[in-house]
Image (cartoon, rainbow, N blue to C red):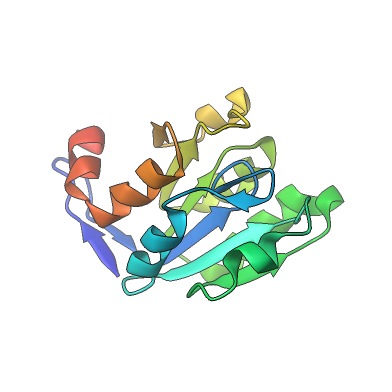
Length: 155
């Protein structure tokens, strides 16, 4: 569990990390450099779940050997599938994503981090995010170095 004391706000407790795959932690079906190492570190603190419609059919190979659960679903129901998965996880979820189909899961999350990666970010997602970062490593580093979140989210 990651506990983050944010001045002027309620303590934030994160038990699970739900990561969108393509566009967020991967580009063109390939895991971004530095992501695997950060997932390995975070897996000691939280349950890591990767959510994907697996557009490129490469998610299983990209995530092989990493301490995470990979959940796939049909691309035509991606948004609803992600929302249902996050709902089933209960509270204490941090969601990281970049697309329109991430809005539903963001709305259920305790912490929502939008990533601007090589595929860009859906503008509609920004109104549902707590933090916007330039890439996947920066998103994961917020959880590995929670003082960065304190500075960004303090009241």
